[in-house]
Image 1 (cartoon, rainbow, N blue to C red):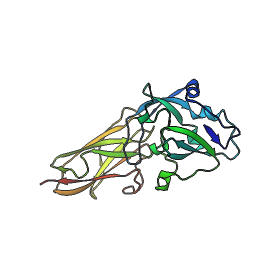
Image 2 (cartoon, rainbow, N blue to C red):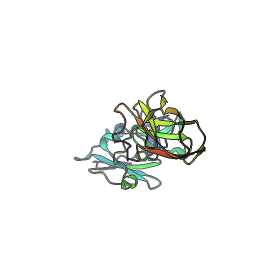
Image 3 (cartoon, rainbow, N blue to C red):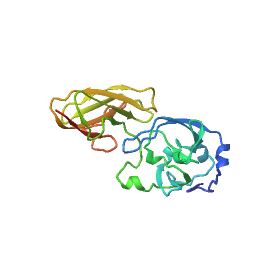
Image 4 (cartoon, one colour):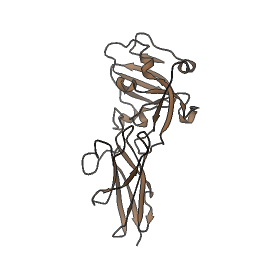
Length: 248
């Protein structure tokens, strides 16, 4: 259902969604904890087509999205117009574990703005703080450049030389650089490969430690706007760090 701040709510069945001309969109799903899926092709109904079918009340500028598991999130109207109610993933019917029968896909936003198992969308004049927003996450959910260290693991015991590697992602914007820092040393550029925007960038760098013991390893990523401001971003959305132990 698409209701709330509209003249007449729009009631749609699954078959109704399938009858509307579909769109395809490439999108990876990134969570605020830096876990990012591989980019996938989603097919579904553009929300813009459904919004064209309803008369919005004056002042309507946001929407509350409700999922079958009780999860909900808010989106502003501009973001909602870019979203897709996806029912296919890489050419196959969306499975329940992936959010089927219908989930929300919204490029350039974190996964907490893309609920699974959508039941209804209620338009409103103002947004509401939901689960993730109440945990001090961004209310817009707009994705920032993020880098994750996948190898080695946190608290790993290692011998020199050491290769660090991982992924980076910035939504539909290309990754222009990844850097790591050891303890309070200088930022060091890593080698980066990315096939295209929407896909994960892969990065790696080799480091030879000068002294054994524990070391703090930090990673950051940049898009076309550069690296996040500040010496090391305090936001959990843009910072990533692990501790490794170097053997003698």
